[in-house]
Image (cartoon, rainbow, N blue to C red; front, top):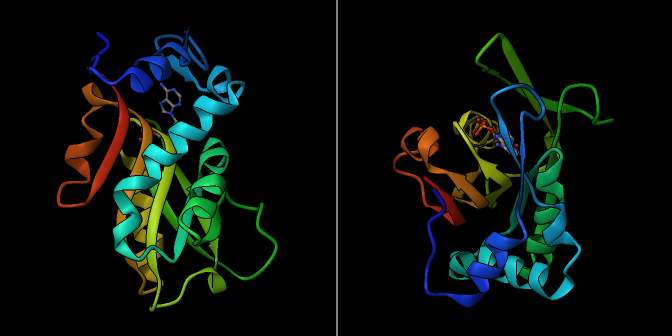
Length: 181
Ligand code: AMP
């Protein structure tokens, strides 16, 4: 079920998210954001809405999660006049890295970040396209906090409410524009 609000922009955003059933594997409905990226005015609006709740928190670093998180994290960093930090799958970043491992449904995965990307003085906003189970976002926060930086919050374009990622991130400041219940 799609949750609608009275906001015309938000309704337009829902129309620009394409459901792709059984991708990348059977039983998953993939939320494809590429139709939204084609609409420059609406994409800009989405970025403004994702950044707005965090304008007053003095964000100095925007952490974006590979790979679709990069597409949203980069313009959000510009909007907040903050530095942009990519968090990547193992083996992609060239310089000295910190690493966190996290559990998947089957097995484990890991994320890496350059060690010099954040410092204890930083105030970090974590960005991704979709909040599903919350495992990826939780791991990203762990990696940032392992560098003694403060996580001020999380912003997502889409929240899959039925997967209860928000419960996993309880106590965190968390915003999502579009909700699927
Ligand atoms: P999770 O760790 O379960 O919250 O999964 C979040 C990560 O997986 C994000 O980086 C998303 O881009 C991706 N993801 C999970 N579920 C979907 C979905 N249904 N459609 C698109 N991306 C998804």
